[in-house]
Image (cartoon, rainbow, N blue to C red; front, side, top):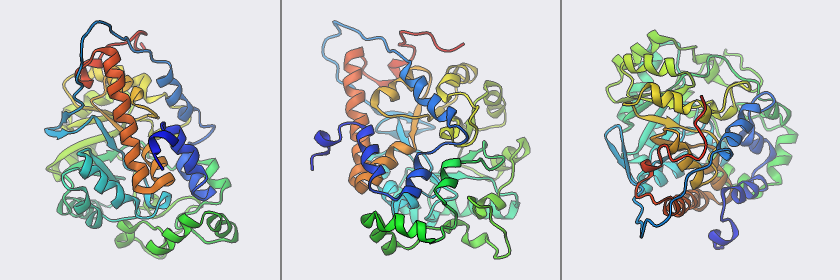
Length: 382
């Protein structure tokens, strides 16, 4: 199958993915929280942006390469950490880590992934970022950091917008629990997706392997939660200071939606800020991450600004860069490709984005993505 003809857009991959993975997995991947207003807002904000084209610029040979926090990338796009990525597709973490190493883009491994830093780090090569859901126990935190560092991860991402568990109603309706319980309903859903089921049986039921070391049998798990919720704490500024002392690589804080927080993070010695509303999965009343991006960019003009928020095309990547992003991270999009066609589908997502960026940069007369900064037909949000 020529995916460029059958699936020329990420939305095509999304539709195929929905029919190739069980319903409870689809609800986990695709859903937001509450009424999903912030999830919808992310995409609506992108759709509202118009970029200014240019004519009579002659031949343009776009160069998508970029540098962030001292590291060279082939394009300003990376793979965001997604919890239980291995539920979406078996062995997803290592598949995506290898792809990131091949494409020379960042790969973020979640604390609550289905694979450990020790097994994923070697696959990621020099592209490994480790995302930390903050353990309340300082000894566990230091042990996790040591494991990530020893496995080759050079950038630490503190996710700061998970002070409390969110209510994800679609996941609850699908009866998804973590650890996954093989109820008759779950078994039937899995049986209806034989390719996913066979691969899952081959690799083993997904679980939070990084946390195995710290789990206790006497912990009571919430209905749609996991041991990670019981280990983690609500981080504060002292927690950031402790991480800055304990981690000697690049430190990024994810979940920034307030410019004042970005300024304070710069003062605290953080190397980069990540503008994100967690894909609409934590707080339904949160603003679209794109809407706050210009103010964060203006508040910390010299800092690397990372962003995520519903990317579905190369045009969306350029929209985010025009609003101030240095690096755009993909969560759902790359997993749609993975769920649809495995490694081939995930690679195709990057092909779609690259080809889309090159086409749009030609229309805008841009040689490099960062030249899109400010090339807006509409004013940035106040």
